[in-house]
Image (cartoon, rainbow, N blue to C red; front, top):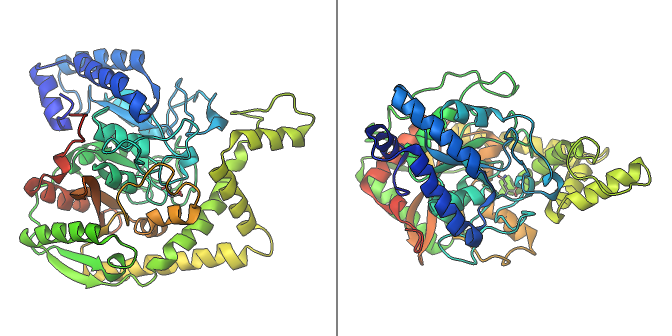
Length: 484
Ligand code: GLN
């Protein structure tokens, strides 16, 4: 049952082949069996999942239930869930029971989906390996001892290992796409503003975007259909109509112009990964697409720009964790200053503190113009590169990450090398564009992701292009050994 797609499961539920309670129990059993080794869940919601499943069975038998009804999913622990611990991977929020649902969470509830639990993540979504979680690292189901990528590594590992049908993730600089690539699944970061950020704990508000992580493009489309849409509670939410994401999945892609940025190939890219990317591009040519060499000249400025903008926004967003209103509070503070200092000192991990310090520095008087303002200007140049590219091509393709999943501990002491894991994904967030990662030919048994970048609000096109490849290849259907 755990290898089926959302539409297959929805059919099975409607045909009475199995109930949502049975399906949910199957997943809960797998979670109980495999989570101790993977650590992909922080919280498992067994009782409420089974209750939701029973309700879903009722709705299905009453008829007219939405597609996701009774389908077991998981939410990244960055999304607030009413009455359920929402830790954001941090000791700071280890005691935090959210008093309301994030918009995305309430949409999935309305759609009848069953929440199995909350997935592990890098603390406050800062990281590329899931090693920054207060709850310990997540293991990649493809190789124990390898990272799953980050920061949505718990969601990626859970989907890849069949510990949920699909999951939510968030992507500020690559955190949906890079773990999707490392775990061999399909992940989509929508256009900035497509999915409401209400109740999604803020890291860098001008970059953060929630999106689906699933086994196939078709499943990602079904998930995005639920998540996307305008929300008055998020002032940056886009008032754009939501198209039917599944309607065009099978559209012919003959004549599609695929831009391949010369800056994304060669350089620090593992040649074996480049070969996998070329193999996928050759498949696209066979499907009638045309490959066009393009240039995104400011590519190398993406990482340094991001590491000014994201820490600046995080230093501001994380000032709300002060030991007063919610979250960790130190014991017996002497005075207010001691309360702030010790609560924050004890509650935040090393990477979060590093970012807060960098961001506070970049925003301070005298440095603002030199760093923050400069970074914002370069951000425009990066967006302009994409705008020019989309005059010539329909989608852009390249690798998602420069390597396959590395070992736990391998890069943990070297933040700059770690930051480079997002070299191909970060610019997409800076520009606010939609991006996707889909599995292509593995290297030495480890998954590799092909990144697809689309123009604003062209998620349907990305899903169509991804789905077409998944119709003629089976890279996306490989399952890690031991998790069949
Ligand atoms: N790896 C990047 C960082 O550490 C991106 C994280 C993300 O997308 N949330 O900030």
